[in-house]
Image 1 (cartoon, one colour):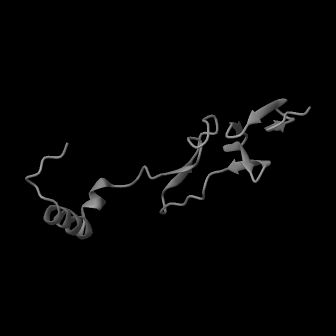
Image 2: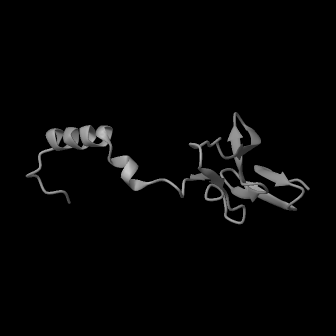
Image 3: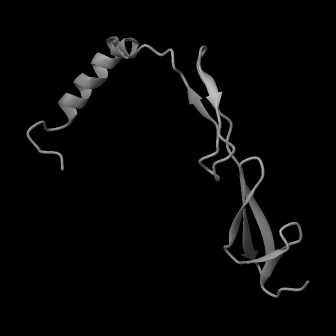
Length: 105
């Protein structure tokens, strides 16, 4: 089939206009893009993720892109571990840098 000014996707039996997008399997989004009077299909996928030892990668492929992209989950992380010396230095810096008398909206 011929659809002037549109991206024809045979497996969907559908034409998409410039800027139109659709979901592809394995957490991918495709977009019909016009560039220099030609039409192309641009694919967007998830980036690589990694975590600390004890963390795991979680992903829900039933969600649309980008919500389906993998994320790192660290269920065994002890919140008290975040209260070390570096945390104290950071909170002191925030207190010194920002005017505490100015209300935050």
